[in-house]
Length: 281
Image (cartoon, rainbow, N blue to C red; front, side):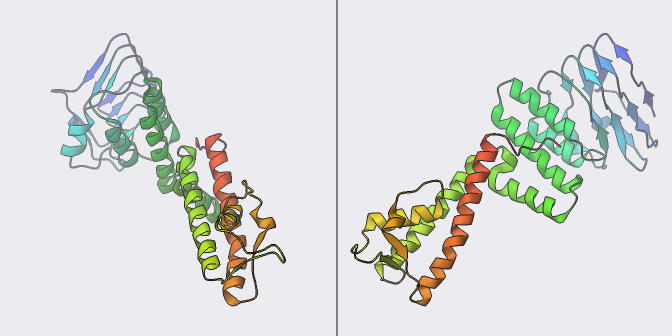
């Protein structure tokens, strides 16, 4: 390494930017500051540091603690650097939102310029944004963490990978639970439309014997009862799906699928809203 300062304690700021340059071919990194404690700010420009080793590791800040600002000019570094440099920031702790770069730049850094996937850098970044009152950005960071986990992390088994992907699609890994309500509303609208269409053409919906024809309101209620299992309008006691023709049989069988989907979306919303399935791995 060009600079080897593991576990160093600095009572002021550290400046490794401006005219500072360093190069190395060590797989341990060009600048090694793992475990360092910096009482002030930390200024590092990754674009001014190079490494020709196998890992391309230019900066090692694992388990380091910075009491002031972390200043990495990522906008310039990510745009100007032509080499595939890497940093190691697993365990890096800092109290404020990093300067000289947006959270989009930091997400790109963690996604494209780290040696391997790690959860802590994402959670650290989300933590300082949440502490500053930026909840939306914090959620975006944690969602990006799960996407990186799916891409580079260890998700063993096809079932776990499938459930992880579905969780992201339907509730944003637990950080966007109201998305499931949108799917549930769409399912309900589709079901009501199908039942109304069937009733309009006298294809699949009929009243129970001796109770008269189903009204529009009762038909809508039957569709809601089918798609939203947590809501019961009572229309199912007056109207039902006829199975005397092909259309009726198809809709009757589809009723089970629609009910299962309704339960699934409702369960996903509750689980996401209460935080039961939010991932921190």
